[in-house]
Length: 378
Image 1 (cartoon, one colour):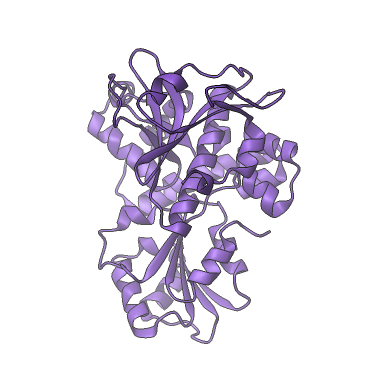
Image 2: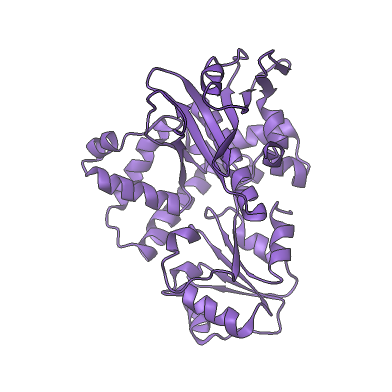
């Protein structure tokens, strides 16, 4: 099954090191192996492969060398820079990892000018339709029930999802975390994840979480950053530029695994958030454009679920609804401060799409996400 990043990875690997990060079990290794007929695969988690890496021993006649979990190697960037500077990309060099490569940017020498970084996301509606010719309604039901990770998405049963989910979290917390960080509070981090589930799509107070877990707010911030580094969650920050009224400053957190969210309304918003972030990362990684995902909310009740910025300029405001097709009044409020911005209300159960005289677009949530192209807005 072809993944959406496939042609970009192949092209860029001809001249640069290609780094592929993303959530564990999102398909990074499978994708890398699909790019070439002849390759060697070395996983830093395997003792025998670690020895080969230390000695720099692998077949140079192969099309590509795939280094998996290389970020766990001390001074891995300096080591990789040495390979590139002396041997180039013959064979081609692909590095995959289940942690955010940017989180380790200070380790060793810089790879500036020597690599391209791609972030592989789980399956969303757009990828399911474009690359797998999936039925749109069935693809949405699988996403909302089982999430977008390839294994549970394709199997499509609650039994398979529950078994996958438990193993997925255990590997991240009890293997990846312990490999990179001296953390003894795994059970507290597990509890933090449980506390985040009912708070999905809501602004999160570090203080309240610290009270619940009986640790200081700085520790909460550190743990949340670790969960982000390993692609369990991602944060959406409030946008505050050029807005006169007082705004809430607390972030919102969403899960890469949509199906973890218990509340149906929050899960629907989480599904939209993952699709928007995936498109933002795709544009950043393939076009070099700087984009951001935010939300808008004032203390006196004006709120918009998502705001996308391109090069720090607001371009698209999105409100998510299950059935209400009445355009949010908050669009008009924020338009006073954010000129020339496209406003779209996405409705899951929408009878017919329409535009208001004020230019607010009311669209089918499923149809919009299946064809969303951020390039149209910059």
